[in-house]
Length: 315
Image (tube, rainbow, N blue to C red; front, side):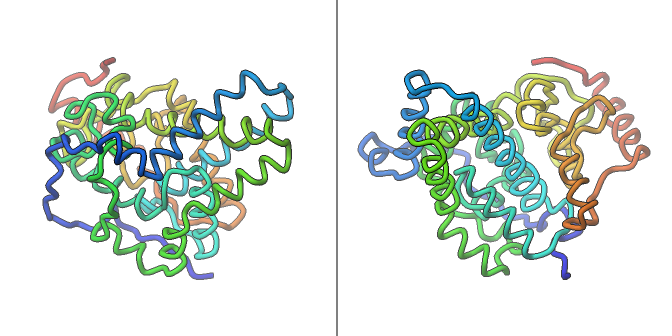
């Protein structure tokens, strides 16, 4: 079976993007006409019904499963595969990962990957679309995509390796379908209570857990390395967020080895997403996953410490 996935980081494009002014906010009337904002608000509102619907252990269990499966779809799929091409897979499983990622309701995979690649190119500089140092916590957490009209368009020039797949282009236009199907299944399984727990509540928690990587993981934690491309990048490792996001909280490691399938580089840095990728490898669904060698890790540590001294900081 033909495998997709490039053995490179992402296209080396030198074009500067003019995203330094973050003062273009949607008006209240424009927000009410924004389908993304209305959906985001309504799902949060319905999730509050968890305090009023009948509690069932089955709802809690299914909500947890819904959260974990979709978090892995975002971390292993949207992030480590589509954004960084850290392993290879067949075209069918690639499409499956994209569909599963869409069920997390974080827009389409092409939009997600294009803006994530942009973030890495300009991490924690004025050009970064969601740096807490230039826009504040709430801007980096959700303001950049929810209250601004500047980041709606896909950065097509950053994803030439992805736009060659017609099925991904189709899915981008219909990215709402997987989430709609999950919402319907949740309702059919448990009525309104099932819909609240399995879809709405798990989606809200999933959203904010993902968003913390952009916000909190650039503010609180420790650093093992100087980041690639920009030494000003303040990405940090945060064990609590790593557990919550199934491995994405080792953010300093990630910004130091962006093409790595593994982000928990120390033996104690738990990385459930990487374990998932390894299991998929054993099953023959993925291969050629990239992990830095011990020599590369130690060399980067020595180079980082010789440049800036100790990097183990919190906050």
